[in-house]
Image 1: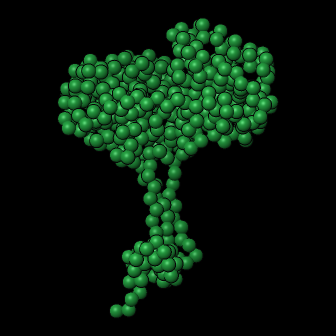
Image 2: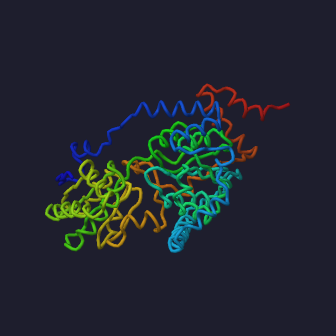
Image 3: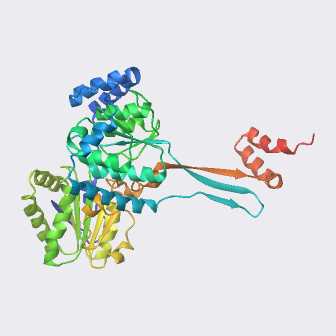
Length: 433
């Protein structure tokens, strides 16, 4: 885990170089997904069937590609009742937070009597991809479905690999809790492409959201423009500002950093501290804690060694200014006075305040969404929310008097742009017959 001294509030070139993600362009993945798209567009279900056999070793039929309610109900019964109650509580809290995000249109009339406004309309149909590869994440399922429900999306479709309906009673129970009626299984990237183009018996959707492997990411990227997507997410990252020198806080800070490092060897954990000796102790504690994490500990060690970073700066305000330049997915203000620091935060996917709010609270039950911009993209992207499942259109009604008043303005600008028909569209209304 690299340590950098950072006395100023500007990241040095060597720190920026270490932070920069090396863009890995896998030409084979792009070629394979492109071929998959062409094949699915040409052969529909037969193509999805063959890809599902190849990648998931599952015999897909036109009858079982859509998962029946009976199958979902049978699997959901296998869930531990306590876990089912936990999921219901998480859904309740996430619903409450997202209900505050609902946007409303507006109507205005200017001082000349002209009317205008904006309407907010939910998307008609959305597909949610639920991963079924190395890990299953029921939390991401409700984080993606709930804002779509609150936005008023009429048709929400679930796409998932066959493994989900063998191993995940949690996802089956969430399908029940959230009232989802349309669920399909099959090879992940193939299902994404089929839903985007309306193939294999899946009616076309307007948007696809949800995480996945590099094939899912490439499939979503290829569909963008034909449909909308949420984002192309990179590896997870966290930045913890340690506004403390207390010995008892060391294991807490270390465990919070590891909560993201255990995700992926390419995940990034960043600590910003104002005391080098304190930072060194946290580094020692980080590696110590990995010894008791089993397999995820091995992943965490690889993450810390490859991407982990400690910045030592002069004061707490400098620490926040450095974090703004990193623009992390998750930002923890580990402080007894976090709101003072929050005033200086500009860029982060989600911010966790105080010593009793580890990032994992936000992953499961806090309320805000955990689908967040990664790799520094919180400078220009925002967390997934209700607003991502709506469109807006404006409307305008001018009076004849206003049209005549502004005729010189409109025609003058139109002719400057050499758009004669634009100008005449106004003038023709005032030609005496």
